[in-house]
Image 1 (cartoon, rainbow, N blue to C red):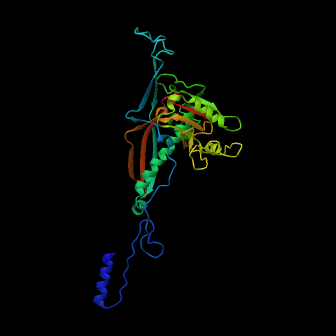
Image 2 (image 1 turned 30 degrees about the horizontal axis):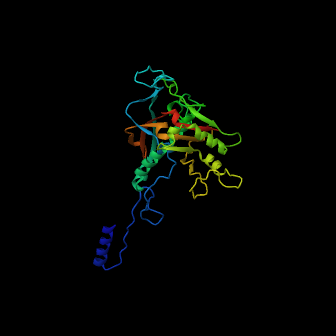
Length: 334
């Protein structure tokens, strides 16, 4: 454009007349502009905010290298029934010391994005925005699978992966007390029992929350990472819980937000929209309760001219998740 202006000025001086200078530029996406010529100005592209995986706020990370992940837990007690004195006693714990193992396959999450070549040439920072949004989309997909997927059946939870997805929290067995699942390397092993509190018929009440709290063993109470994960619709029900004077029942001392249920009994509340209506509340020490394994790398490949005028981006990541310590978390059932 500058060269056109300079050439026009020289021509006007040389010919002693008025010269019209055409400074319009063509755009690959919008042609010649909005009927006036010139180039359309694009702000940097961005990705709209998504509710990314809240389970990743506190969990046990596990770097994944192979195609499977194996988890092992020591169970039972080491001391004999008469541990006092200098004479070593036999292992007579209840139960005796043993190891429980389970193995899960690493799952693949992939996406294919067709992108118009003309868009890439015009829109600023589009590539970065696409990758950012893809990472957030992956986060949503894995969160839903971690919450509700059934990895034992191919038809009940197809939207969250089914037999190709993760082992969701919903499929763990509900019980009065926690217990490790069966030991072995089959896909049917490691389905633990979680201590589950049923809510009062007709809706959750204050005593339901108090009873659920007592189910979590005391050794986990003061550990870093202990928190509630609650479905947003359930948070609304807890906010609406009032005493005889119409005041919020679950208002924490020192809260100045009108009882927004930011904390309950001292533990922070994390809104988790991926939890199902069947199990809307979890209280756990998440670094011990949930383990998430990620591959050390993910694949991105750009394929040009896979369709006329388009560039296709293929991306893949690998992940696995499991309840690692069934004693470290409790839940409420509807």
